Length: 104
Image (cartoon, rainbow, N blue to C red):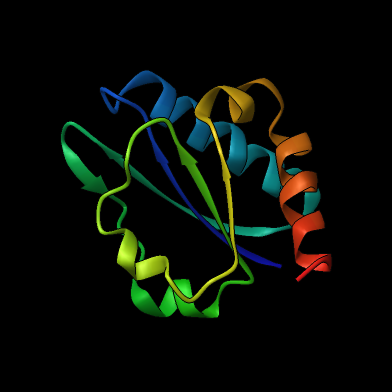
């Protein structure tokens, strides 16, 4: 399973990076391949390539604010959530996201 994600919070600092770390840890534990892009006051970091996005099975939008360059994700199955939900229980968020794949 290939997962791409974008994390962003109003300032683009603590919650952005905490949710990115939580998602990466959960994906590693569960054996999923994940790439996470962070967005915030310093712009886009670890920017996902269009190829990475196109090859992914799902995009997880972990946003508390509007995402930059969202048009890149228009052709991929998307699951949206908040940074606080991922920080609290990333495994549960992953389960919910992947369950939406079964329904498409």
